[in-house]
Length: 112
Image 1 (cartoon, rainbow, N blue to C red):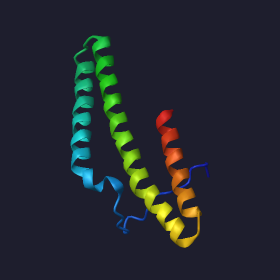
Image 2 (image 1 turned 180 degrees about the horizontal axis):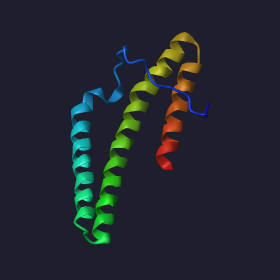
Image 3 (image 1 turned 90 degrees about the vertical axis):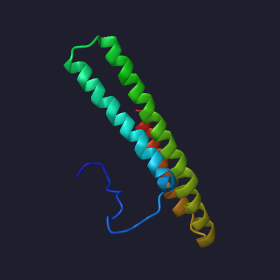
Image 4 (image 1 turned 180 degrees about the vertical axis):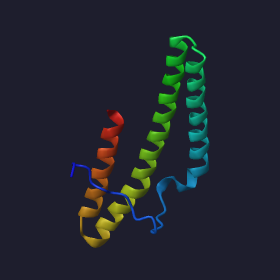
């Protein structure tokens, strides 16, 4: 199969994620972005001026980047820090190395 690995957590395992404390704010931001995307769809349907549509798409991209950056920050401050503590406790550096590789890959996807 392709080079994609399945890194998804099993759905029956509950894990506290770094963003959990800010989940409501994150969901509000995503709802606003969803509304912006629907608005762009209406603009296209109404044949609005191209530059106005591109301006709205730029605003959507900026909002998505803010959400992405917040998630990366939470992942590092929660998941990577916890993995570092686990690595120190166990003497096995692979815990933190895995999390660093994971976040590096995610950041690489965001930069494409």
